[in-house]
Length: 262
Image 1 (tube, rainbow, N blue to C red):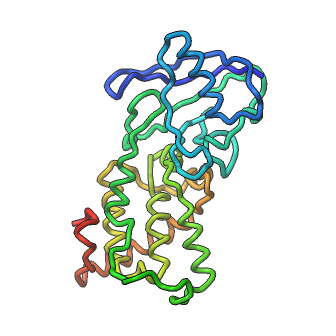
Image 2: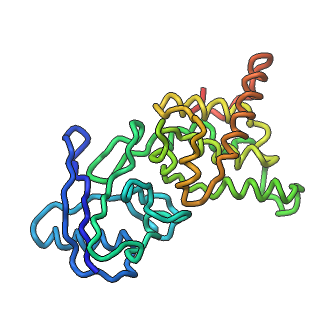
Image 3: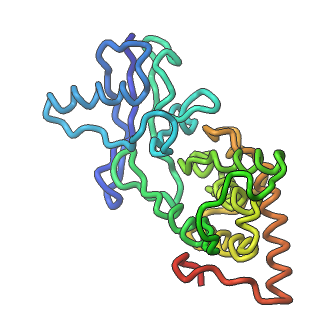
């Protein structure tokens, strides 16, 4: 099969970008989308042209690095898969496929399809950790946790921080990301001591980095490659309200100074 790809090309953040169309050579339908991009880049390199810059790492749907909007949908046409798990058999011979970066103000373009997602790192530095000293590692069954709670925490922990939720949201909200990263800790006993401070710090950083508010359209959960439920956003809202009330009437417990939240 052969396809045409309409790709966003942009030299750097300060240079205007534009779409360019490339014809692919003969492709194996079982290639992943990123392998197709590799083949196109090989041809561009042979021709002496600048290859298309795009993010990738594990190519197993684990790292969250791949970040392409394919035909208007983050990660491509299928549910519960990352870009690296999208295969060319998902398209038809002769298709014109539009490929763009994740577009959001907090994700500035570095080059072509590569965006800078440091804002996610700042949110994690604000509260996505546990700093309470617990001593040596405990036995797995030392702290009883109800299975339903453990399952929910594991569901939240599946978030790979790819940013598809932001790219899909009309407000460029990262609330699903924040809700998952805060929720996986807040649900467990080890995370309770810093729960209020964690929620306040992460939400504050989310807003400071320029992400928009959640208006419950649920595009985020629809495109999430790990199918993180938008119900975590509702839980985050409840936790945020509780933390705000607690901080109003008493001083919230302080996070470790290494966490970046003052």
